[in-house]
Image 1 (cartoon, helix red, strand yellow):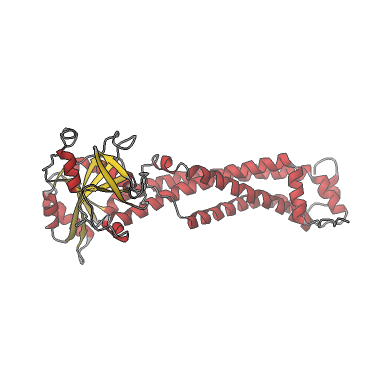
Image 2 (image 1 turned 120 degrees about the vertical axis):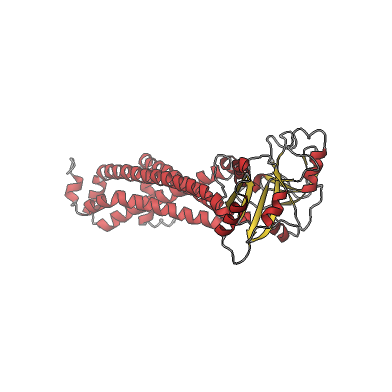
Length: 405
C-alpha cells in the first residue's frame, strides 16, 4: 500500500502557486524585471568602480608628462585603449629626470597599428624599454619575463592570442611571449614591443609616410615618473611646471587623471540610484495591488480554513512561503539573465563606456546576488505587511460573505 505524502505548509504553498499560475506568473515577471534592473545597474556601476581602482594601482607612476596637444589622445589610449600615435621629444626624459624630487623616470611610445595587419580595427602598439620601465615590468617579472627581443611582443588580455602564437603588426611578424592579466584600462587592448622594433617599423619605406617620426628619431610619447621618498606629489608636480610649464607640455598626477573618471562615475551613480529607487517603488506599489486582489479573491478560501480551525498564523505562513518561493526563483532567474548577457558580451559592453571597466570577482557577484534577493524580500514585505495585518484582524464570517467589507 502506497504511503501518503506528508502535507506541510510549504507543500500547500507550492501547490497554491501551481494552481494559480496566472497570478504567480504576474508576480514572477514583475520581480524578474525588478531584479534585472537593480542587478544590472549595480553590476555595471561596480565594474566601472573596479576598473578605476585597478587602473590607479596598475599605472605604477605618480606623475605623467605628455605633449599638451595630445593630452586627450594619451588619456584615451592609456585608460580606454583607443589607438593613437603621439610624437614627443625624447630629451624630455632627461629633463624631467633632473627635476628635484624625481626618483625614477621611464617612457612609452604610442603607435596606432593598421587595421589590415591583424585585426578589423587599429590596435594600440606601445614601445617601452624593459630595462628602465617600472609600470609594466612588475607584472612581467612575476611571469619570469626580464627581456624582450625585437621580434617578441606582449599582448593585453583582450587580444585573442596565446603565448607562442604569431601576430603581425605593420607587416612585421612577432611571437607572443606573454599575455597580461585583465586590468580594466587601455593596456587590455594594447600590445607591447621594444623601442628597437618600433624604429625598425619606421625604417620600412612602406610605413614612413604613416608615422610622424623616422627610424633614427629621438622620440617618445610620454614620460612616466615616480617621486623620491620624502617629497610630496604636488610639490614635485609644481617643480616640473615651474621649470617647464611654458614648454608645451602637460603635467598630470595619476590621481588627477583618474578624478575625471571618478566624477563621471559619481554622476552615473546618481542616475543609477534614481532608477533603482523608481523600480523599487514601482514594484512595491504593483505588488501591493496584486496582493490586495489576491486576498480579496481568496477570501472564501481563507474564511473556510478559519472556520475549520486553521489558525491565522498558519494561513499567513502559507502566504509567506508562497511569496518566498516566487522571490527566490525570480531573483535567481533575473540574476542569471544579467550574467548571461554581460559575460558573453563583456567586450562589447566594455567598449560602450568612457570609463575603465573591469568585471568584479566571483565573491563580489555572489554578495551582490544576496543583496538583490534581500531587496526583493523587503519589497514584498513592504507591499504585503499592511494587508497581512488587516487580514489577521478579520473574522471568518467577514471573509466568506459575498461582498467585500
